[in-house]
Length: 128
Image (cartoon, one colour):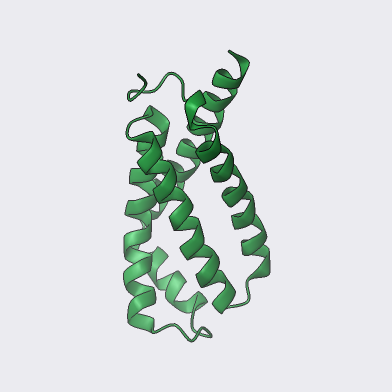
């Protein structure tokens, strides 16, 4: 029972984290997108691609966060979250933001735990 409870708290914590990231960025979407564009000026990534990603990112974070928090389509939400972290790692590497990459690797490790222990999913809408 302790592993199921621990999984629940980790899933919800990751959900609230992503939901919060998305929510605060959605409220100021244009400012966030402008900031991302400025942060990626030194990157070799095409600016239109950076702009598109920066506009889509808050919606992805919010949606994945909601799904993880309520435990709906948990496996898909975890895979989407892990995939998002991979994209963020890639982007951070293009501007040599090693500090951000360190934090993103922690997220990757937490998603590893969520993926590898999916059988412990508990108190979720999609629980069997």
